[in-house]
Length: 341
Image: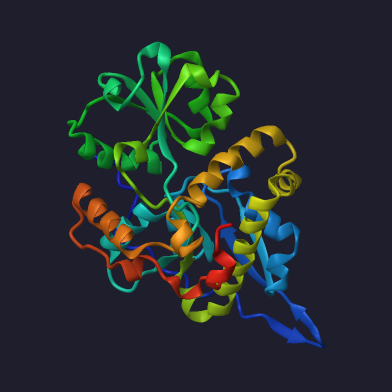
């Protein structure tokens, strides 16, 4: 399959990062840390805003700024460029990035946010979309550089369908709901939780949700990423950020309304009812079934190995990264803190 590669052969790693926290005259000077989201401010990432609002980052000595992203793939290049020290990005794309660039990993995953990737194609039932097979010959909207679209070859391989099974319609993220509602396309790629905006405009019974997991594609999704410079020069800051975020994730599970209120404080135009429903879907992918065995934020080595194999084969990567270089679990909070209730 002809693919638009978002990766360049080399991106220089930033040499200058924030200095460690300095303590003077008995008062802490918080260490600045720039974090990039994968996309807009929504309920999907509410724990980060809850951690910020409740002072969890400050308690770890961190002054965290959270910026909107331009896609879960682009987060990788943002971090490697040095513009951000940490962020939320797609782990399959990280595997590809490491294969292309080689050497010491410039960026690693340090906490698995989506224990299963929430990749889905949402189809209109009035266009005959009932299952993956019914996509044949249809028109499917997706952004040009977007992880759900990029992962489609893995689904196609499982289903044993050929390239060109359906027609891609390249659409901006912000226009995706519109083209679906107007009927310009038959289906569109989404993060399952991102489709809540579509569900607010079309009745759920009018739509079919085709989860990639239903096709037997079990992928880890967006993870918290950190630059190599941050990992080596400020390991305590990485660990502190993860402790604070993990604490907020547990809080968001226990009190979703508080998490959404913290997010709305950042983005006042949000509809709290819509974002609560979005978070309800998100938490299903964060606390997927196998987190019962290893806790939030961690991965099963064999599952990640299979993902590396799958990505390497489908994308024809010349170098297969080692899982230890892709996922660095050295900074995870204690297992007792990551246990899923």
